[in-house]
Amino acid sequence: MPVSTTSQGTPIWRLRTTRAQWLQYLGWLAGACLFLLCWKVISDNTMWVFVEDAGRQGSDLISRMLPPQWSYAHRLWKPMWDTLNIATLGTLLGIAMAFPVAFLAARNTSPHPLVRSAALVIIVSSRSINSLIWAMLLVTILGPGVLAGIIAIALRSIGFIGKLLYEAIEEIHPTPVEAISATGAGRLQVMSYGVLPQIMPAFAGISVYRWDINIRESTVLGLVGAGGIGLQLNAAINSLAWNQVSVIFVLIFVTVLASEWISARVRHAII
Amino acid sequence: MLTLSQVSKRYPTGDRALSDIDLTLPRGQVMALIGPSGAGKSTLIRCVNRLVEPTSGSIRLEDTELTRLSGAALRRARRSMAMIFQEYALVDRLTVMENVLSGRLGYVGFWRSFTRRYSQEDIAEAFRLLDRVGLPHALDKRADALSGGQRQRVGIARALIQSPRLLLVDEPTASLDPKTSRQIMRLIRELCAERNLAAIINIHDVALAQQFADRIVGLRAGQIVFDGKPGELDAETLTTIYGEEEWDTRVQEEETEGEPATPAPTAHLNLATGGAS
Image (cartoon, rainbow over all chains, first blue to last red; front, side, top):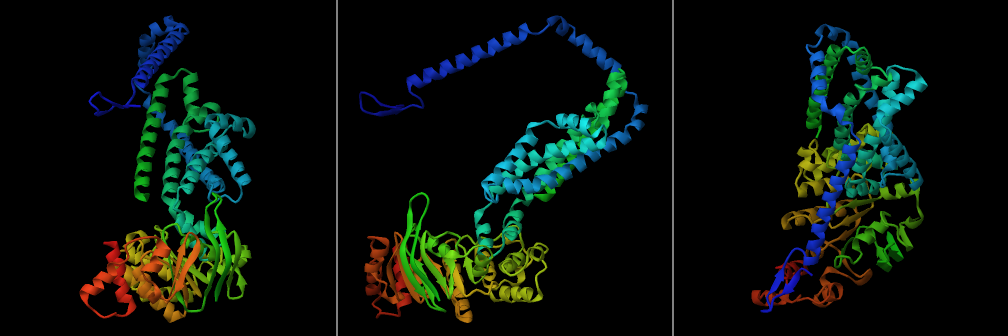
């Protein structure tokens, strides 16, 4: 008990008992030891000869990247446009599939517990696989190109949008739903009048946020052949044309910055 | 018109909210249901429109046995029982007009309602009702832009556009100030008289109940312990309903005022205000 009494009889309160305080010190000590141990293991597994000249290697790489070969940029507009299309169409496709899944997965709108489990499995399996891996699989199945990229982005987006949306559905106020049911409305009407208006801000925010993420993800999908700027990046790295790689980096950076700005504006306007 | 017989409700937690309720409500009667929090008032009216499933017993609205309905038949029955809620239960992000028209959902198909293509009669009726409840200017505002009293008026319009035969009213004034409470109760009362509606009104405020109801039913721990006219409610029956409390302030006030027994409502008004202060 952190409350004790002095010999004069006045009660004394402390946050922890002496015992709990010592246990806490011991916990910190154990944590520090674990940290040092991990440090040692990592250090033993590192070849320090390579790390020693890291500074020189890095500055060498940067010197090859500079100055960027700006004339290369005109060949990048088409792949960049592909990248934007992959992200946007993939997001739209993902939203279209995630929307019903979210309603089936939310505890308060799901028609049956079994359906709910199935919807949760869809969400989890979509989330557990990175879009780069989805793209690798799809390139094998569909062949290289933009289509594989779009579907990869869509499949990865289902889990993200579905999960956030079903959490939003579970957090709605129940009374408007009750009121709409009490008018004699059917199941779909209750959803469209009682549930949908309540989740619209969350839905819009989630979708724009995912689009923003997808712009970034679609820039690397080309590394496995799924179209977009990543193809050019891969080719440039393989041919050691570092002054072209730097142009691609700058372009990706500017695009991501722009998408970030757009999504912030859109979210601000909707909510 | 509405008949409850032997209605019981036991929640899965084991709480017995209602036990063997027998109650008959004739057409056009406004009945106030009073009782302490947790007495089962909300459960009782929610059993009638089946937002809560009664465990046993029978509830009949005219010739329809409500407890056994499901699917389309239940939705049809719900159309004729409109509900008004404590926290108004409007959909905040929809406009006032959409909220009112949502009372027609039991009558229109999904696509018509989804695309908001209501029939001209429904729209005309919505205009009439908004006018009647005193909100003709607000129809294009969003529901969350309204004050509490205005929201409850929208809730009333939404209930009435259902063209119900029975109103189920759950604590309509609990979130409102005393003046607005009276206005809302008067409005409900007048509308019931105009349309010959029966109503069950759950209400905490005993004075309001006495002022506006034809009949008062007291519920305690899931059982009816009082059923009578507003004038018959005295300190003794209040003790039966709510438990021991100093209900006598009214008597002292009447003595000091030295007035003869005025009509029941005003006299009893003193009772609750005195008790609350």
